[in-house]
Length: 447
Image 1 (cartoon, one colour):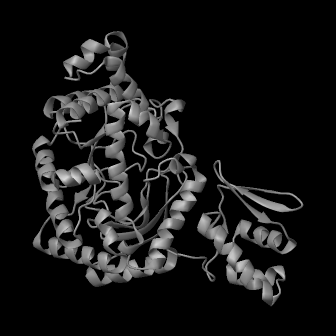
Image 2 (spheres, rainbow, N blue to C red):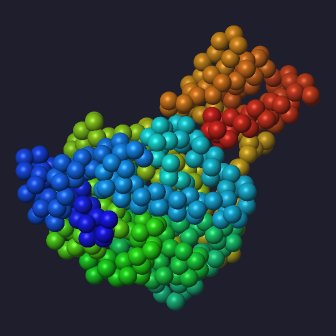
């Protein structure tokens, strides 16, 4: 399928996903609507492809039947493979860091089948923020970003510190930090110098992270310049630029500003309330939820971070993990600890301290762990069954293990458990192996 044909199909799919008036018009006169967008194939074939893709119902067989689904599946597979390559073991500085990242992924996939359904969701060891707060204040923000207060500007002093921070992070965590976004609870384009920092990130890490912006209609020239800087390969293979849709007015303006070919490899995220997409039941989408129906709100964390959140403007470094959004963690994240840094050396010390304190690639003996609060446990005479969201794990039952799990309900240091449950010496290693398996699968976690 050539560029022009796919770009216009993608634009039709974007209109369908965002604008209810377009969906209504398509149902009445699909031929006229699609032809105005330059999509000339059989209307039923186009509409079937849009419904199939947006409904997530396509598979290998259906992809072969419809050329648009086939092309979409091909492109989607290419991006997914690049994502997997960028988080492979060799790109982490140490086994423990890679193992910790996978343990968090195992836990989140066990806790939430929606995350389990999306195989290319991974959790990265670092993110960087180049502003304090966010000017946009999207009503659906799962992280409830605070109002903007300052930017980390591209002065000579700040440039030096930024490059030192990147170099230290790469040295201690690995080449995987080239996927670490330069935003989190921030809008990247709030910072007038965002592109300069991104250019340094590419020079220091050898790669460029994804950018997601909600301001594409405000800064078309910056967006085009950013696309030129990223290049077609990054846009096509790494999904390097995404545009968040806040409302219909903004969407219509974006459709006017950019051609289908310009946005062919740019993902649009339909976050307006009229869209066919759903929202994370977290952050501002819960606090001010009058415009979000219950059907559109689903429980999952929007965070891709399991590691350090570095705010260059505030000079803070925090250790953050994803969580199921609830009353205890309404933002879908848990902040374990926040440290400050003034220079490269204090940043290095903070990073090492936080990873040594919280990022364990196997069961820690001397740190309290507990049963994951998001699981349930059932027992019978022979088995102990632990259940997550549509998934479970079975263990042979014995009195010693039951006592250990009772201790772990409230939390206990693993090194203390054998003595507390009366385990003989020859059983200690077996008990630790079993508890480590539960930790790796996410059924046990740090208290």
